[in-house]
Image (cartoon, rainbow, N blue to C red; front, side, top):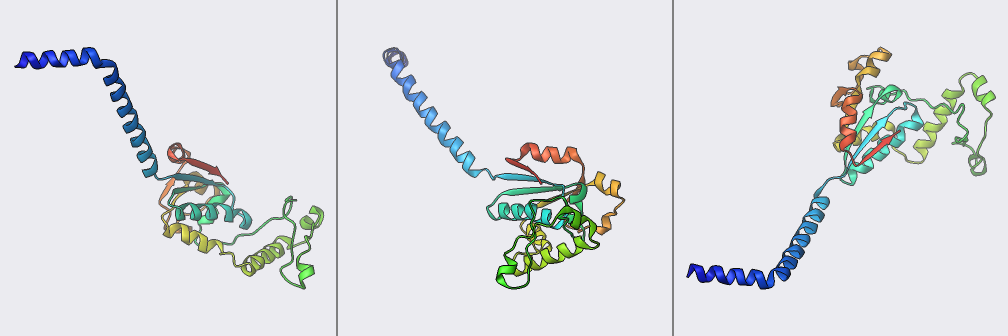
Length: 210
């Protein structure tokens, strides 16, 4: 009986080996493609942001991008280094510097409609020579932000923290600027250096430098 079964299998393989191979190959390809599609759909996108600027205008892009990414279900890590580290301080005193920024025309947040729509292209000579100009520009920017209903940086930062964004602070920058850890928010998950950030960036789908 066993011999007869072996003979039947040998005959089947000998006469139908090519169709069987094609069938097995097709089934393997179908299952492989299905498994890859399932794996890709289950993978959570990841984003790493290196934050290097500490002025009011440059504080918005990283927090807006990070909060939007987490709202979409992404895993987000933010690495704050050099002047960007100041964005993690408990007390924020952010300023803007229009000096040398030709892409930043000034619009007044007060006055009649026609007056508020004028883009004032103020020469650098005036911006750099008038005492207190940066403070005035910062006050006008904050007033415009409030009038347009844009959330302040403190609120955007809190949203990022609540939504699970991982905050990494640069230890070298802390030492370089002579700051102390007790000046910063307790939600910082890690004090580290470039090597730690690169380990995260290597595994991220998207990396941004701001």
